[in-house]
Image (cartoon, rainbow, N blue to C red; front, side):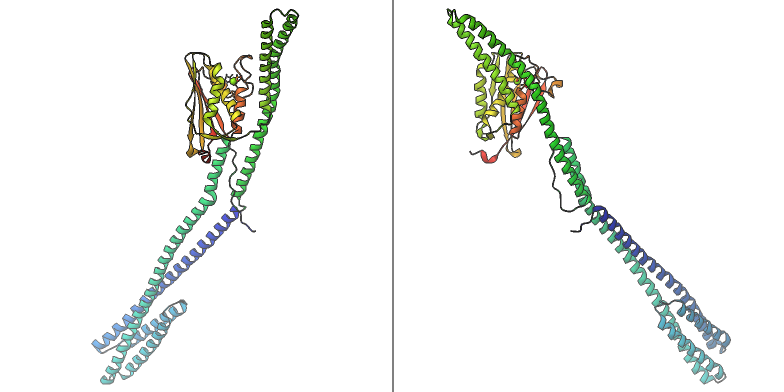
Amino acid sequence: MFTLTLGKKLVIQQVVRFLIITSLCALLLNGYYKVNSHFLLLSHANSLGEIVLGIRQLEESFLLKEEIDFKKLLNSIDLAKLKLESLKNERKRIKSKDLIQHMMQEFDLYASELDLLKHTLGNNSSSLEIFQVIKRKGEDLSLSMNSLVKTEQNYVKGVIESFAWLLLSIIAVAMIAGIIEFLWLWEKLFLPLKTIANATHDIALNKFVPFQVRKGKDEINNIFRAINTMTVDLEKQRKSLVEAQKLSSIGTLAAGTAHQLNNPLNNISTSCQIAIDEIENISDPEFIKELLIDIEQEVQRASDTVKGLLEFSRTHQFNLAPVDLREVTNKVLRLIAGEIPSGIAVEQTVPSHITLLLDSQKMTEALLNIVTNSMQAIDKHPGNVLITAQALPEEDKVVVQVKDNGKGIPPKNVQSIFDPFFSTKNSKEGTGLGLSVAYGIIKKHNGSISVESEVACGTVFTITLPWHKELQNF
Ligand SMILES: Nc1ncnc2c1ncn2[C@@H]1O[C@H](COP(=O)(O)OP(=O)(O)OP(=O)(O)O)[C@@H](O)[C@H]1O
Ligand SMILES: [Mg+2]
């Protein structure tokens, strides 16, 4: 389908605006010339009026003194006819054309009556009669004259009025066009620009959400599509970066794991050596048993290290099912019960009946890692670790927090704590995998984890998980 780009629409808009303004200007100019020409006409009509007035005064002198200046009177009539003629020819659009024609005839009649009067002078009765006729003709002339002036005045008045209406219409049209243009620009330009600004803001916050592209192929839609493509590319790059980081971490992880395995293997080897030496002289079975228990523990340690490596590198097949969150936290407390040092209290205030879609085992593992860290971070007693949870149905999420009053995390380390193998503990105490594993598990649940910490005061880990209304009566 044929679609116009925004640029073309703007050009068409400007051309239409130019045409409208030009035609309105032409109308105004035409009106101006009309008014101007009729003003000239009015001034001519006025001078004609003065001539008619002069003629009438000469008539008066005949009535008073019984004498008349025929020459002057006829000259005035000729002058008036000339003026009329010039008016008639000069102004093609004159409204009183017929009236002028009529006045010409009246002047001719007036002149012929005068001629008659000239020849009957001396004969009092007939000259008085003729003079009465002349007087009436003079009055007719005055009336015609007034009518001519009035007609032209009315016409000029009409033109000026239409002029005012035209101006008002121009202002109204300009205002309506301005409002329409503003609304159009608001919808087509300002709103999309705002959407683009929000999108770039989201991208800056690492939120790569493509937005809805409206129909059409204008420039703004092209920008929308370009940003969407960029968003998808950025998301892909981010994912591949995470994968690349993961891969490079696996190398480090392998080295770390080798190191971690070396210790238990050495211990196993030593225990085996001693056991071999002692086996021939089996006088002390308890000692052999201790050695075997040591070996079993070291095997367990090695197995844990290998499990950690697998956990990190394997793509987990999660088994999500509705689970009461409190069951998970209870399990965490049960698992660590035997390892809580004296002087430290680990508690929870998680309400029951918050049902979430969880892989119970994995979530237990994630929380276990976080709670273990908290316990390990407490160097002053009494210490406490508290697990809390709060459902926020209006935001469709649940917030789980693990708070401790341990030594806190220095700001320079905060960025790194979720990195695999980042640890401030010695190699016997920690591998640096706990939080990276927890991070991966929470991400798989479409959740997020963040940390706030103050050195010497304590740390709060905040986990956000999706909350589903329909699960709550499960
Ligand atoms: N609650 C906490 N208080 C203070 N520091 C913490 C806390 N939790 C984590 N950390 C810091 O983050 C680092 C990384 O933690 P992580 O659990 O990933 O590894 P780790 O505990 O050192 O080793 P692992 O858990 O693999 O045995 C820790 O070494 C510690 O410095
Ligand atoms: Mg840990």
